[in-house]
Length: 391
Image (tube, rainbow, N blue to C red; front, side, top):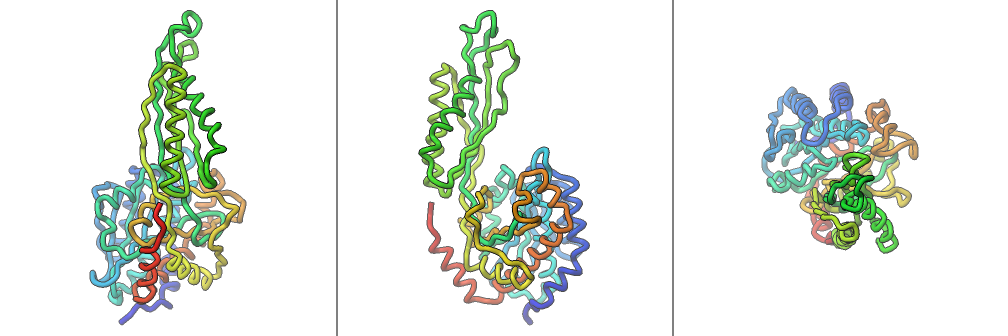
């Protein structure tokens, strides 16, 4: 007995009301990184209603989970769900659709679980938005034995293999000496002055950054009162680059700017790296098969788009450990809006968003079926992975 690929699309159409409900509930109840208790529970409950056991608190994370179908022998494919939201603007990155799409792909394959030759995992991965949940799962061994991993991400267009940048975040804590700002300003040393000068110094170095580098920051704490020389100022910067080598070089420049500003202002600075993500290595063999299925479902994806910028994702770290894909699926008109904007949050809860989620679920399920059945395809995926560029 083998998987009947022709059933997958029809099964997903039958599952559509469940997937829409899960997506809508997550969208309407946004939860931040590592706080996604309701979202994780709703997904897990939908899996359990289909008769599949769920391992909660997976990898030691209270909002991670894993469900598994198949024989336990042969290839293993992981389908990843994200479901965390952003502060203030909720699901303006569309993770509710990522979650529902992954759930749909998994449940459609679960309809034929007795025919699976190999194993399919649904892995709930919390805290993509600055928490590195997938990295913690990697460290816990969650991806050991996995032959391929996949997910999709909403966007304003369909792209198969668009890059994602390596990234790290640096917290800069400047500590000076307080004094009355009018009575004795000469007795103080301003942490805020050093903080602001750091921004200026970094801007002065942008001419030396390679193409694709992004450095951006914001002030978390700019002082305590208008009539006090600020003794404390805190900023956070995100440093991004196409690969780890350039990321390390730019990080050194950013840190040098902070130390130089602190020295000039006569204050102390403490630099703390909060988290870092690796660049995304798209497995073209796998994602082109996904793209072929996407085309069969009526979409016309491009491989990449040089007019688009690039963000970062902890899926990058997974892609360095396991052959991986992270295609982008449009949920609105091209140019209408994009991730982390208020309008994108609305699109993530729209009918067009739900329709695109269902298409992505079908393409992921069909690609998974191909990987399970086609040893030659798996071998080519592995060969490409082993030949991937480092750094």
